[in-house]
Length: 321
Image 1: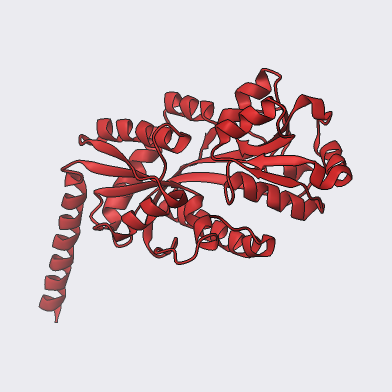
Image 2 (image 1 turned 180 degrees about the vertical axis):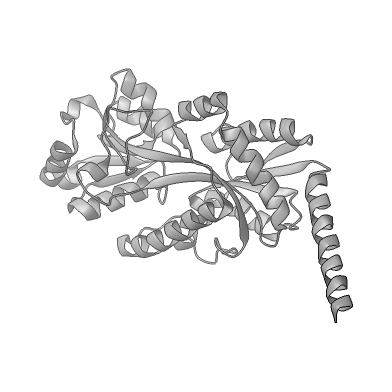
């Protein structure tokens, strides 16, 4: 019996050593970072920044592969079907958890089809309005929205986008209504608020902050529970509406079934990268806050986002083309 126990212990030790050796050897060839957007956007910029640093740290190319389409579903489904060997990774945002409530017949499960690797950043949406609207805070904006109703035009980067969902949640919490104007991206929407074509907009910080600082837009509130370091003087919606929270996140995933030691190696490397002052500064310039943690933390964000929007999207009758 004792001899059998010793054999089993030896076998377990050899297995553990084998896994450690595999983790140490990984990666030994190029790794693909699949991005669900076209080149040039903030998520693509984040992926390229990570890819450069991961390559320097791990000694293999991390090649960004843009697979835009269907609001990210093209890339999500592609990675969900990829071989779970650690050589195909996904750099994704909250659309991964939102889309199953927006689209019919999505061919992936945000909780079951992927192995969370690392939460990299979080970010806020910001409600901005044109200066001529004459409001500068939540109280006056809400009062104006109740007064003008559908005569007030508030845009978003697109139907079903985080900006649109922020607006829907805000309307629900404040019992307001306005005309929603959907754009194909935050840049054109910001330009139309600056030009006075629409009254306001819920949008990510990156395209809005320069216009706020230039005095061309008025920032009313950010959608995260705490204020953003990019706009420290702008209150959060939660300061007036406790519990309000639309926190965008960006993270790295692998196909489900990817070896835990490979996931752990990428996670540890990303955490070191995100701690670099230069990287933190670059991410802050994009409107991101670094927020790295264990893979389970990213998984929790996916689960919470999926549950929240699966409830709110049908209630609001949000549809996409």
